[in-house]
Image 1 (cartoon, rainbow, N blue to C red):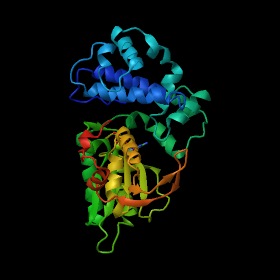
Image 2: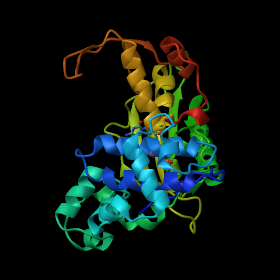
Image 3: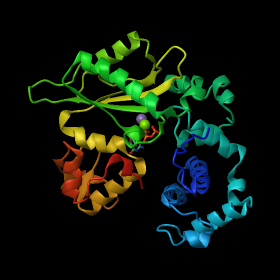
Image 4: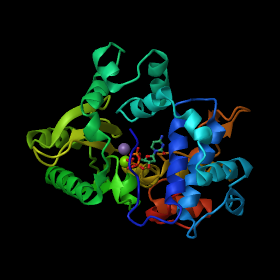
Length: 340
Ligand code: DCP
Ligand code: MG
Ligand code: MN
């Protein structure tokens, strides 16, 4: 169940980066124990991808920021071709966890539990009762299609289709494609769509999501619903499902998120990612005495010793990405540069 995330412009260390991707995925299923190592592998993959000259030894890699002795040892292991720890970790159990967590709705924790309970193959999940939800069962049925990355051109076609349908319902909508597509990636795991409406004339986008999903169903584009909003008529509502461009097309994962107008910039920032960039941005905000989430940047948040919020604070920026970067005092970074 490895996803193919290779770039058309692969650098000289892509093969090493892929090794660290593998390690990251194996460790992802082993929740709790190896969080530190896990993040290290993820970061090493990113750093190696951005290094423009070939890395030939662990010692040489240690001249790069964030690569310490243990990551360097791993690099030497990979370069020497010795089985090493990766081989040791590449058990049936680890492979099953890695496969299961690529199924829609199954996270690393649950994948681990399913393996603990004896599941080893997708067939086990299909034929025995593991108490999976309806959404997870759809994910299982469509597994082979949904693990395939979506080429950039098809993402654009899907976005065009959804945008056209949405604007026919309400011409004043704001609609944007986010996630890996907005970061300029050559292919994506799903299509992430954000919707709101300028409220200066007193109207909102409420009601659009329901009509949009209905229209796309009628057009034969939407084929499955995975998760529907708690309340279709809230300003903040999320629909998750599956669609395809044609009857012979591959089923693709689609997320459509509606948000209040005032949260546009913060939501765009959050859902453009990537997740590692978001984590470092949130951490930076915290160091500066702010708190950042998908709704906005807050000042005056009070936390207890464990880091839990005891006071919500006041939202000080949220309408545009620029506003948030500016208040934090950092240069605005275009989506293509939002990597660890
Ligand atoms: N996100 C996050 N933390 C999570 C999940 C998501 O910060 N646990 C943010 C960052 C992601 C964005 O939401 O970039 C969209 O989530 P996706 O899972 O769709 O991830 P991407 O679009 O980045 O990648 P993919 O091509 O796999 O869809
Ligand atoms: Mg995505
Ligand atoms: Mn998504």
